[in-house]
Length: 215
Image (cartoon, rainbow, N blue to C red; front, side, top):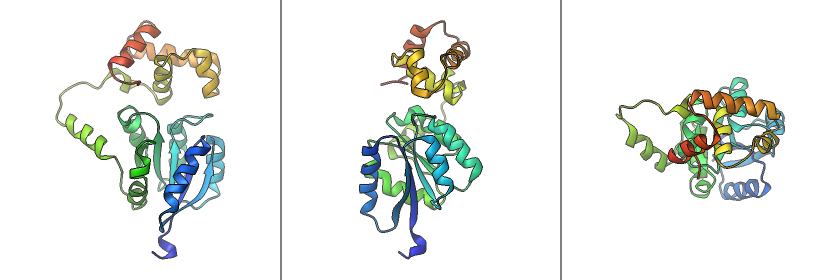
């Protein structure tokens, strides 16, 4: 590998131990270097603008902003940027939303040790990356004649609110974690209930469990 072939990576994740783990994995390669990192969305956007990284590893659940929102902003500023979304959530929960928003790929943090290097090399060449497990899941649904589930009609923030409520979190807790007002979260909740034709949080939780949107 020549110097010109080096892939520069930026890591945006609020957990220091995760960032260190990712850096250790990449330290074993000759063609990939970590050239920047941040622990929140604000710093990620600010610091990335000053970097010359070609690939970003972006946590989907940053403390100050949803990762998909950050993804959309970065892609507007730099359309050629390859963004690999990282998440603790199962792939079928957020992968399709991430790819539709412009992500080059999606990795669960559990699969990162095995797939990270391959994924970075692939997306740096302008290709998409999905895991073999997700590819199989998508293949299983090819040709199926069915309407899209109701939760696919939600915005990214509404979907995030849905999963958090279904996980047992109160509106106040969600507001604090997302750095939003209680009023704003309540509006998200009201909108998603209307869109999904549900009456209350209990029905919402039942729907999320039935459709495997939460663990």
